[in-house]
Image 1 (spheres, rainbow, N blue to C red):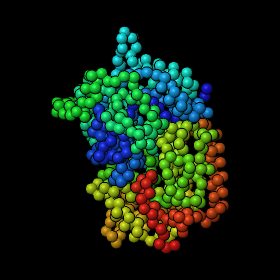
Image 2 (cartoon, rainbow, N blue to C red; image 1 turned 120 degrees about the horizontal axis):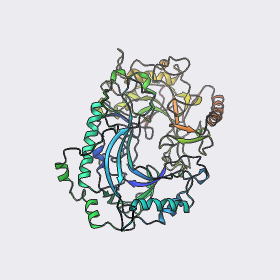
Image 3 (cartoon, rainbow, N blue to C red; image 1 turned 45 degrees about the vertical axis):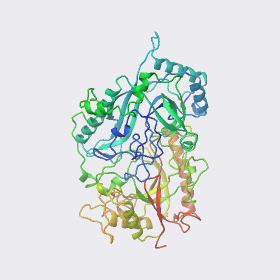
Image 4 (cartoon, rainbow, N blue to C red; image 1 turned 120 degrees about the vertical axis):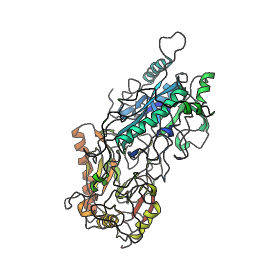
Length: 592
């Protein structure tokens, strides 16, 4: 009766929308709340977010200027956290969840939007007393309590009681929560606003939108859509059926709905009126008449605590290139939009265990030996992401099933939005082609956990190596003007948004022979914010992993230029990444 694997699977309601600026594969499951109206996709108020960006409002396209992960919309509210789906670790299997839910009968539940709030301080390694605070943005919602007959308990309370009983009857494990979740929609994490004023203006703007929703749906609204859908996402184009209204969904992970559970009855006439109000064009009078916010969202961390702050772009420093990707960036001067794109070394491999196909870019290192997929040592992941070198279908923790995204980032070029201070993707390609470099040799040094809780594989940071030379060349040509040093290249292509200074050099980076003040630090991240079962378990994990690292060091005493027979056969290529998910173009060494 012990839960030894913390998991993220859950039963909930989806607010996913398909929008013109979002991921074209996002589901349209919510016709009632235009979620894109409560995000800041144009960066009018925000400075930065974590690598996932907005989790609501349509998701992201692959070529978004911000370089955010190209996920579909995953907006939802949890009703019951199932947790781990591996019974061996105290979890509840998917079959048990399905059987329990199919034994139940429930009516369509109405949802009432309460307010948008901020809060949830993060812990970024580049966050200090001079930096702006970072936190989460969340839409608080509630399930409307409706009563049938003379019952003293609401329909929702009865459903929850029946759900817990059904889960127990079908053998639900101890990892499942023993209470319902406070309904909320996580909108974004690691959010940094440009200033306290921008924060206040954002929360006023989006809560005015919520006030419109409240006026239009005074007693809540049943969530649903007239669109067609099929689950899970890898089967979304086959056998699509009308979504309907009032569905509950099982989320294997936040981006992966595996099935829908339909309510026991159709909508009543008044429920249908409100559920179709937006699509029928009935919202316009409310947008015209609602000009004030009639509810109190103060005390929610929404810029209302009179704490003044403003981002000081001149407080930026070259060390910020070594960044915690679960938090937002602190941007340099004249840069008005973040960007996750980078130049680096691709290290991913194809695996039969993965849901998403992955190309094999090297066969010198098998990073599977460094992982703990069976949770022998670890307890949980601190984010929705699991192992970044690829997650398995049906992983017990319910981590997002990503393809292998293994890589070593060398140079973050920032946003590709020229109107926001960046330079275009085509210009980045021109610069990369313009630089002559030798084969990029890498040599693993040790496995460790950094101050942000991420598990990383450090590679030797030799400032005199081909990687060090390439880093110096990129800084000289595409770094930002800083401390009287200016970039120069023959093409006249520059940016204000790279996270590296023109005067930075590899010798200023990490490593025993370098000064530790710059952005050069070849590392590969294996997982974010990992929690271990105990300190002894953590020691055992790193001892085991570093034995493999020592083996690789002996196998490649001078390092190795990675590649395969089909990809970069001579080894040591440079990759242009839109984000850690999308490798856009590859450049082979000129000086090999």
